[in-house]
Amino acid sequence: MKRVISRPGFKSLNGNSSSSIIANYLSRKSDVLLKEFELSFSLLSFRRGTIIMHWPDNIIGYGLIKFFLVLFSLTFLLFWKRAFSNVKVIWIAHNLKSHYNSRFKELLFWKIFKLNLDVVVFPLPTLHRLYKSSFRDIKALIIPFGPYPKYSLDFNLMSKFKSEIDYDSTYKYFVCFGLIRPYKGMEILIDTFEEISRDNNVKLVIIGKCNDPKYLSDLTIRSKSSIVINRYIEDQEFVSIFELADAVVLNYKNISNSGSIRMALTYNKVVFCNHFEQLVDFNQVLATNLVRLYRSNEELRCLVLNFVTNKSEDVILPNWSNSSWENFVDILYKELV
Image 1 (tube, rainbow, N blue to C red):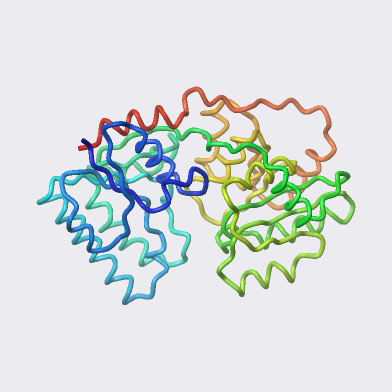
Image 2: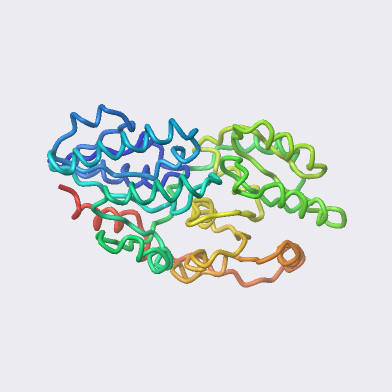
């Protein structure tokens, strides 16, 4: 029996955590015993098995004293387990950049964290090309993620969402979803769409949980025609959101990979996102044209207006044949101890 521990939440099939979905699929294998774990000294009791890590990004956001305490505790735990308990550590490289603005803590975290890794898994080929020199002495796997699992449409949930956005079929709805955090640049989206909506039946909808009251207040003040919904999105609600949305729009300030893009592509939605080199892989790997990258607010405005007015655009849907979670997990399974 192969023993695996992974971060909490793997029983939820949707959501941002790619490692949670991977763990869910691993748990379906008959000879894998998979349990959730928290980053704590309870790891000391874990022997002969595999830890699947999702970068604990929140550590970067801690105050300096707590940051050092947690970082060195984590380092001690992982070193001890690998050296004396036949434990292997696999890191799913969903995030290669911190969402917090602390370069010093991020650099220090990287130097120490990567010392405790046995395998690093890159979900996009360009991510591997850009960062392979940082993991020169660690085994690297390049395994494209698959589509997110889908739920069937719940008309009650769709009615709820319609009510929240005061749905009007004469409008085009552009949705930005997920945790509402400053690194996603939502204030820039609001300003851009406020301008677009003056002369067009277009609405921006931002939906997700915000734990930053100051940032939420700023978004609300900026919004005149845009809609900001501050609440957690349940897994079953995504199908309703994408049923009503005409397109998805994103504006990251820093990003290495995007679960939101993959979620939108699962539902065959056009995605507008600001340009990052690695995001080109989505169109190339999946042989689609649904991801539209822009380099400026003006370019975004032009893309949106073209999308709204162009009724006969040829859309190439994603080809997931080489990017399934099953293939991913079958390759990852060989690395388990």
